[in-house]
Length: 471
Image 1 (spheres, rainbow, N blue to C red):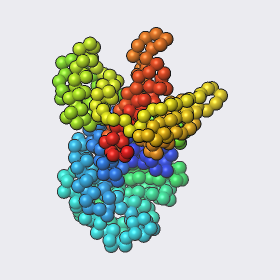
Image 2: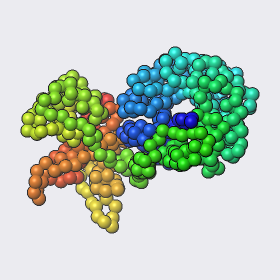
Image 3: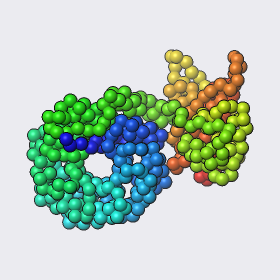
Image 4: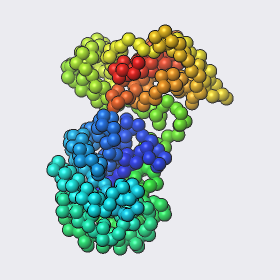
């Protein structure tokens, strides 16, 4: 029985017109869910920002244990192969993708290249990717609208250059299931048997799942799907079809269907969480990484490793400060978890002179009015102020700070916990912001939860502007 590889493109399509956007941290969490579910391949986007995107690929490579991590290179930039491979090389199972348009309309209007030039780029980039020693996939974009002769030449060029898998894309969604069957059957018959054949079916006619099944029956070995979104075949539906009807056409997949409904529900909740477009919160707040647990017996290297797992890149000096603070806490507790370590890093690492100081704030909120914050900050001797509406008092406060500093930073985590008991209990807030791929945390303590949140957010912002020189 043939084992059909399931390749999920949900992370790759984040931030496009698919209607959802994932933060850095959410992409890592989503990849872990897909990996645990048994998806064969997890696709990430190409590296556009050298620092942040490279860090994301490295983080995904570390998080994914069983699935293949696939990352596309830039077709017209040979140096992108080295850049992408440097980020991807630590993955347990790695794949480089050479994505090229093969229809006349896409070559002329998107790639701005003549057919002969596109063929040469396919050949060169595939061969260059193959020198990295990993699996290489050639993705033929808009193949269903290409000239048959040129499509054959493009596939032949990629195969001769050493690709392991050829993926055919019905980008425009023009084919019906019976047309898809014949199209894929003809290509399967024309390429060498050892080359695997993949497909991606557009859902423009709401037939992506049917076309994907037809492609499998015609000989396709891999199908691109999405756990969330309607741009292509559905991961949930295709896995169910293969489970119920796969024996009829000698096909199965390794997706764990017993965990499918629960995992898809988690992924959809992550992708479809509604929020105001102006909110300072990036698609909601996620639980802290709960698998960090340290004891008094752990040494400096263990603490630094745990901090890195939470996203912190500590210098030698900050690492020593964090370890010293950790030892003081660990002597009084049986164990130190992720939340406590977050607070330790926030209070001990990268202590900087504040660029922005809190002067005054006034927050109004209620069940029948929108939350409003009037914020006053002082930068040097200049008084800066802003008034913002938000989805709640904390959201309004963060938006007011963002408006004053003129920059939005991804809110990686937001934690509030009581540190004393009683009606006058002190609340501790830890805010983690992500900038340039790095995590910066701030800590605030107050009997007022809003006040502690504002102070924590400003603490993280001041660390960013100090280190990045944005003063």
